Image 1: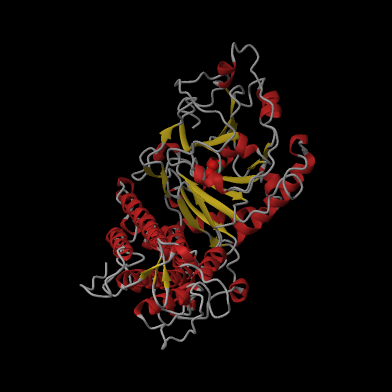
Image 2 (image 1 turned 120 degrees about the vertical axis):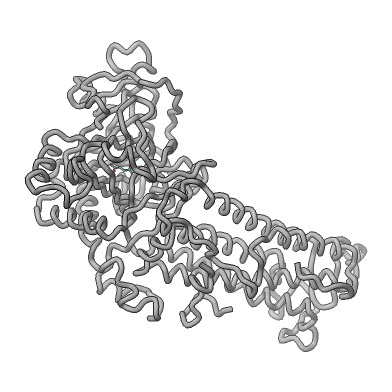
Length: 626
Ligand SMILES: O=C(O)CCC(=O)C(=O)O
């Protein structure tokens, strides 16, 4: 889809002026490691792998976290009779093991499970949450995320979607996912900062997903938040006292990643991402591999609500007679088949395998997520989980992206003026009165260099292209359709700003190209000038401007090449056509100010620099653009 189709609606107001239990069931005791695999046991986020959960081993993301004081890690628990730390660490304990409780209390403090009656004292609310899950499923909102870790591009085993505060996104394993606002009722929409009405925001266009469907998840979010706060009070942890800004943790959840998992019996046959076995302890099929959740506020608490659908005799709700449904759900209360696996990263404590009754919730309080990994071990039924998180917001909201564009767009008039000056328009007939001093504007303010202007625009341009526009269209046309109530037109708005930035970069390049041709005179070292600088009569340009421009173009070119390689990954071929990346978004055509392939442009800039250093040719010669 070209940008003119998907992104530029001229009538639209814009930022820019324009321009299994394992196969053998619960171990019931000490389970020896099946595979001897050396695993790193650091406190940092790690693993994630195998298309796992909302986790990330991406160092770049870790670096985005604000540095905060970290509590010391919880003490390790060494299994009685274990001959070494490694032997202890290779064991798996379940609640029927005598050492489960002491090990959990020591090495897994911060982990807590609430039974169903605590999660939902009100049965109507419980039913509303179930109905919301089923509605999301019926509407086809769940899908596999395709993640990138190192050179591997792979779909998640689970299908998922994000809901949360307006404008929130969540970035994990090099994918940005976009939240369906959970306050999507009419009042909130009316009070929102929506751009003024246009074709794409008409009621018919924006009524998908149907209003109100996420409201039960928002109410669940509030119950889990209150419960998390109560848990910190009931179970203080001296290690964490004084760490963090609110109480000793934070549960002001701004997103929930809602997961849909197939029963172990059918998930192994999933054509997109067949389940694999847990690979460290031999715990059976894992719907979510070992990981820590990433992009979370430091020391915040994660709350996970767990609900089982039908048993595995059919993967469809409709397929089960009511009696069988009841049986499936009561057995998921008395004899749960789904488990969460936990492993401390201390190299000594045994792992835990914790059964989850349907409609229970578990909490990973304070620093638990950073000091442990978790995994989801597949059971007999379909499963929904709603995972409530305090996601980082520094660079992850629409508000942020829009403000970034607005700042960059303010630089465009100056770039346009540089292009005009280079053409000679600034001399005499120009609108600007030139100061005696070439480095200052009419107010005596130092003028930003061309390099600085281009850098300001190119960095925002790159961020909005790769972190927002391409991330949105990477997830397919169905994704765009399903986000039309909120995101689609906001992505259009960002694309218009990006379009304008393309033009701004083009103006900068015009200044460099034309500047190289002008006959100039060398600055005079005797009067304190810089001899590497060539002064033109009516504007100033330096070799550094060419170097910076070539570097910035090279960065964008490299990111486009990486993106092109990513969309060719085999993983996308296994998705339905409407879930595959949308091509040419943002789009390029004959009228675009810049070509998509910027390598030749960067080369041209290098040539212009050589010409510039040679003193220009007075504008003679072939007029080559790039
Ligand atoms: O569903 C769960 O219990 C946890 C899922 C998870 O770890 C994730 O989505 O990152």
